[in-house]
Image 1: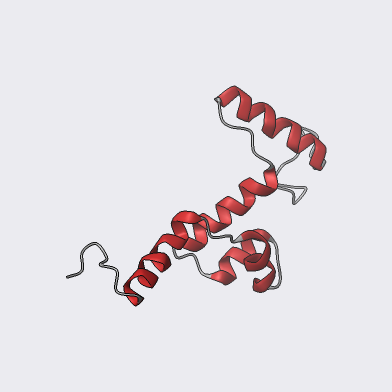
Image 2: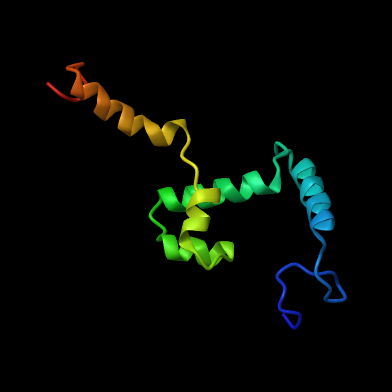
Length: 102
C-alpha cells in the first residue's frame, strides 16, 4: 500500500478513528453481530491469541507497542473460563474431590 496505512479511503488517506468506528459498527449491524467497542474487540483478540500460545513479543508487535508489558497490561485480560483451571487446582488444596481425581 503506497500510504503505509492498513485502512485507507479510495484516495489513499487514512480513516479517522470516528470514520473507522462508524464503518465497523455498520458492518456489525449488517452481519447481525452484537455491537462491541473496538477497544473491547481488540482486547478480546489479543487475549485469545495469548491464551492460544502466541508469544508476548509477537502480540506487542501486532498491537504496535514497543513494550511487551504495555500489551499485557492493557489488552490481555483473563475471563471466567481462563480462571477455571486455577479454581479447580485450589479445590484440590482443601481436600475437595476434583473430577477425574481419586
